[in-house]
Length: 451
Image (cartoon, rainbow, N blue to C red; front, side, top):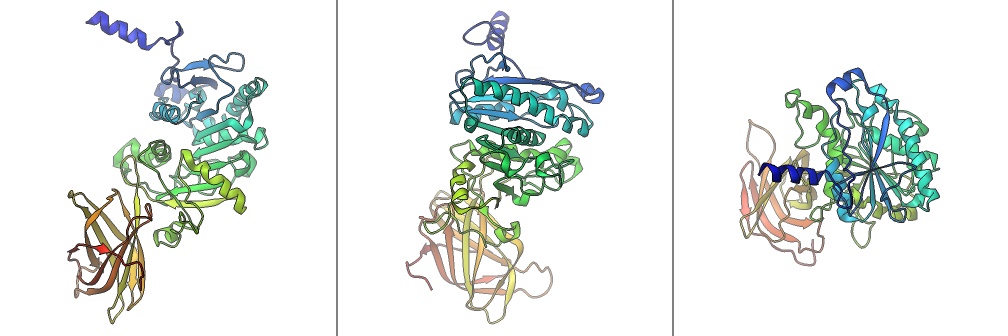
């Protein structure tokens, strides 16, 4: 058995078409981070034929690189411990699963590995120069700038921007995954990623209050959960290293989620996260309105709309679940009340299907105001999609722990899906919600004509 194991291990290190060993990402120790590393940029080619076996390429040795195919460069950022990015393999595999392309991992771990962040950020332009040298040779062999896509993470986002600037914004696309904020905040466009660096620039901001860049940097800028604390990430320092990097890395995992067939992450153009949460911007995606932009790999489907409408930049907001693949399913809960006095409070809604699956949404980010004969439209967010809702429960709460308990009298409740607007809308009439008491009922299809 030992001989078999050794043989299998050796086979994993050899490319299928020859004796050349598979290249691996540079792995350094924390000692290297303490003493610092000089810059050394390695370009590692992954193809559909050899997705897990990288080949070292450079401006004089192209290997299996095919200039007729799309080329996606993946550029990491600051590496304070010297380790390889844990997400790199999944990202390469995901990209090759959706398109037959050249995926080039830009390994500049020697240079990015240091405990002194300014030393790493100071090398970003040099990394960009190495990439320009390679791209120049790509072009000489018949490649086109419009067929080049750069995905830059943290400092890698600004590296992408510097490359794009060198080619006067003619690169096909740049995706910035939580571009680094420290030492780049408030810098002029030529010193950071900006919308003019490619034909289309999309950015996901997931840690704007710490390691990421807060202000818009692209043609469309996505702010998951407002761009601040991400669900499922540690809230205190007792979470260890995850406390420092989880929010920052979430942008990468949201991009990875977009490569799955079962998770289309939809965002909503809006001026602010508060307006989005209050349901003021959930009007895209219908026949009469603009399409809703998709987050991640397919975000470029929205670029033609941006050009047609003349929007130079757009902010878009969305919420996520705590765990992979992070998808959230949005519904509007429309409530018309008939209390004599105004009631202020929150609503918790649960949905159950015929198989007993239950999903819940607590709409409590700010109190809703219920006035007599006035419709309130609340944005509910569910982690699970139930295609056929058999039962609904509502609970009203003022948030008060002392004092009298109130009732919310409801003339009509209507539930409508935003993710699937063609689904039948569900209604219920004449409900009395006792405060902090769950009221369960079976909904009925709403009539076509509504009040």
